[in-house]
Image (cartoon, rainbow, N blue to C red; front, side):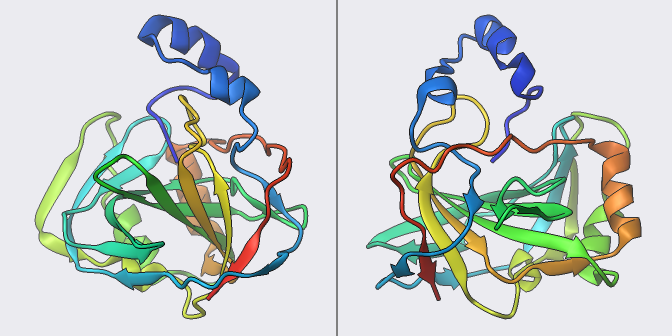
Length: 225
């Protein structure tokens, strides 16, 4: 998850200015991201996704490259429907797998009407050029905080997900203030590939924007297919 602010070292300063409570960021016990070493079992529930194409609405907000999503795409999980509202990118990855950072991580952010969140985290590693990512990179605005709307340019983010539908699932938080602990996280077990040039191109706009790893505490990680 992202927030239009600076990194963790500036959260206290920004919380004072914007009246944001960052207590959970400091004291929460179900914080994200985490290092995933292994899964303790298999979830009985499956995630059921439905994606529709959307016009590209893209902004460089200084913290990430953020794309808003039109209503109509959703996930059913745990008898709840989560609507896809946006997706964005981190470099390096926020989550680690067995201590390994990936080159990037994409977050698909879903929300219910009662403000519960579900986020799919897609790990991204250096490899071959990704044609779909390139279509997004070509639309990144040069100017910060200026959203650009391409009404006739449709994009389906579901086509960016790995073909293998397997995830690590755990209960966590937003990774930026107020760090609310109301997020169902699903981290792809299979990364997608992007080229080194595409990674470096993203980093021209956004430098390091990953929150440090948080303690797992007493949480369990499950496999989900």
